[in-house]
Amino acid sequence: MNKSMRVFGLCAALFAFAAPSTQAQESMSFFITSSGPGNGADLGGLGGADQHCQSLAADVGAGERTWRAYLSANDGTNARDRIGSGPWYNALGVEVAADVEQLHGDNNLTKETALDQNGQVVNGRGDSPNRHDILTGSQLDGTAFSDEGDFTCGDWTSSDEGSAQVGHHDRTGGGAEPTSWNSAHGSRGCSQSDLQGTGGDGLFYCFALDQPTDTAVSEYSRAEQAEAFALEGNYPNPFNSGTVIRFALDRAQQVQLAVYNMQGQQLATLVQGMRPGGAYAVQWDGRDDQGRNLASGVYLYRLISGESVETRKLLLLR
Image (spheres, helix red, strand yellow):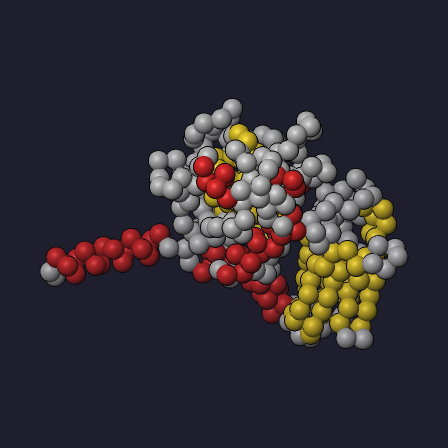
């Protein structure tokens, strides 16, 4: 074997080892955005940031999961309450944290594990360009700031004046908490150039609320076909931070599962589209389609498919 063939074989082996498999990306539940929307810290609010996470995840085959941006807001929305319960894995299948407490404690987030959705390392301090400032708007424990001031660039709608709290995904740099992944220092401003000027690029963390549904659901359906169209009571009920809603389909069909207030206004879409027959479980964290926490109260959740409709009540206690 000549030298060029040996080099080619070595490169191919290294690529095969480093590249994320389709299976690993389908089980991915955490990533850093490979790019921001491109308008500084104006992410289109929490809803726009969530949609950006969802879109990037869909590009690599993980769009069937529900994705949320790790961002706090001035209305008291805490980043830690937006992201489900874990565990979370990167695009290579490496666990970065088992639960919310570990995420904000002794986690496995480093430059080598805090990867983007493609399984690529994000530039950090010492790289050109440095992109290690990750938008969070959060304190060390993942909660929103209670102090007066702007830590979220106008709730993620400003690309001009203001400031956003950022973390360092590579756990190094400057600021009051240089080794913090989620709360190292405030940004210089909110424009794209301001963020880039202090070592950022408008990137943020994305977390999946639920466990993968495609593989798990299809395997469950093959093992045990549902006998009827049915909607079960959610558990726990009442609930505070999250509840699970189960439903069954006796055949493949277009289906919608959504949450409504008592006046009949649709607030949150949990499932939408074609689903094969089988049994399903959906975890919901009590937020609407814009990422806002719903107030305590009684809500309806409704399963609709053609002329088949089932409705139940749930109680949310904040």
